[in-house]
Image (cartoon, rainbow, N blue to C red; front, side):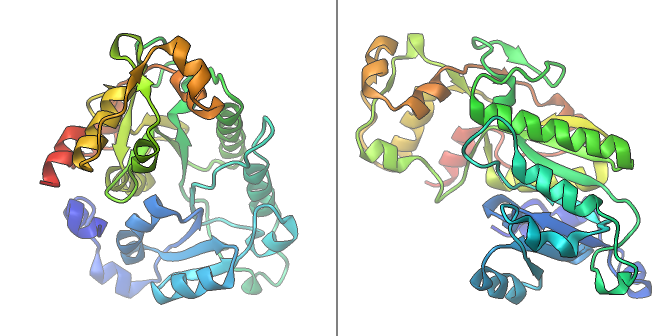
Length: 322
């Protein structure tokens, strides 16, 4: 969905057309232009000259057709990152860590590349500009298990799993970098992201069970469009070194979420089992998620970023499909 039309975000942060004629647009580097950030591109392209890291030539062709300047680079291959030396542009970082280890080496390589001084013939190095804001899309998994209690951003990171520890490591690296460089950094912690076309229907079709309600974990969600909206506003309204829970207004039991998806997809609801039975029937990855139960507040998202959620609850989204 076009975020410009979806949120009427131009009315929130309008483009100054006279100003844009007088000087070039500021530059923006995107590391990780997946589904969420792609939804924000129409809005971002109105305000920035957008550069995107991509690993393949076919990706570069697609991005170029959208009006983006692609940079062929791979965070797993540091030798490809030389063109980022001296980066002083606005940054959106949403590249997930690798699937192994306890630290995020990709974030480390990205920061190492952009912290290197620009070569003397800096005209040949793109993106050299004064310091500008940075936004990182992290995960609410860094909070760890809270036994279903309500949490806000004042709770420190207590990751329970290796995947969450990698994200917490990325956050810490970025905070240290922001303090050293004076870059305003906003960290957006996102939960389960959904949208039409990215629902867990495959799991339901496989007949995988869920936990019975009295033993079930609490989970949080955000629609991909609302997260894209928050990314855009955080570039202008995010406070330095500030963390934001980008979640909707209504946490739900995990099994209830799958029931909603099943009903909307006209699939049978998953069977309910006990936690003891789940240990024998569900994968370690699913059990890891089931081991974390928390309900997250989003007051800071609304008061500081002034985000107005298009889909404040998952039920409001599913109702729109009928």
